[in-house]
Image (cartoon, rainbow, N blue to C red; front, side, top):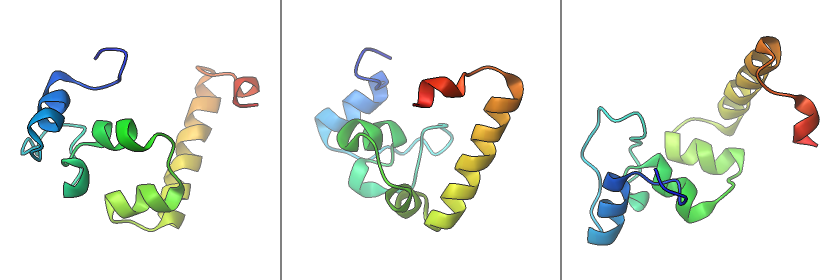
Length: 87
């Protein structure tokens, strides 16, 4: 990844305006509007609402919130991150 947060394959998909077919990639999402790549989604949109994330993953925004809360709880419990930085 470079400073833009994209992998080389993501840059290629953007340049050639083609969707990614690498379903085994950990960044693959079934969202053709953004070339099936979560990295491209973030690159194009920046911060997204829970509803926008849910639309891309085809889950409810409530489920996205549950996943977010569980992830933040794990981070807090492992002391890998200081919640002071969320400010």
